[in-house]
Length: 168
Ligand SMILES: Cc1cc2nc3c(=O)[nH]c(=O)nc-3n(C[C@H](O)[C@H](O)[C@H](O)COP(=O)(O)O)c2cc1C
Image 1 (cartoon, rainbow, N blue to C red):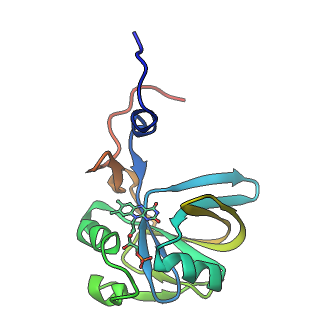
Image 2: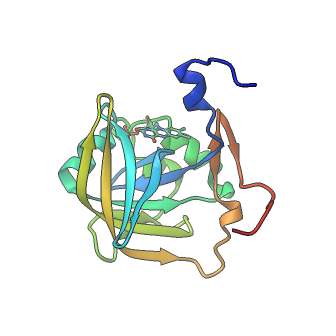
């Protein structure tokens, strides 16, 4: 039987979310608030707090790249989610290779197996964060990319996707 719970309990009841590295020209931020907002055309939304350096950068540059890291990049995922690009060059701190986007001027991360280039087309300004909506213009993907090795987060624990229970 369900019981009355707090709003916080309800929101935290969601199972895991994917974790991505969003890159601009010279910075990277770890992001769990990422979703496919539309399929035709393909749009991705990212929820970025106003306090982040990345907020200023995306607002000014109007482009970003969603890079999907795998579990071998766990240290870098943590680092990009802890320090600010205002204080340190995260490409250098992570040992990441900067690759000029094919269509946008943002830099993608060579070490991530998937990079999705987006142009900012809309934004939803909420109280403590903005949802930037990017139209997907180009994708680079390693042929042997395995989504089962992509990083997810669930209430403070990093995970990979679990066991299959049914076909769609
Ligand atoms: C797993 C994880 C997920 C995160 N998700 C988000 C997010 O969705 N949006 C956000 O604004 N910050 C998120 N953060 C926090 C930022 O990554 C962190 O504050 C970062 O240092 C900001 O970097 P910047 O100031 O260079 O933009 C997350 C951090 C971690 C570790």
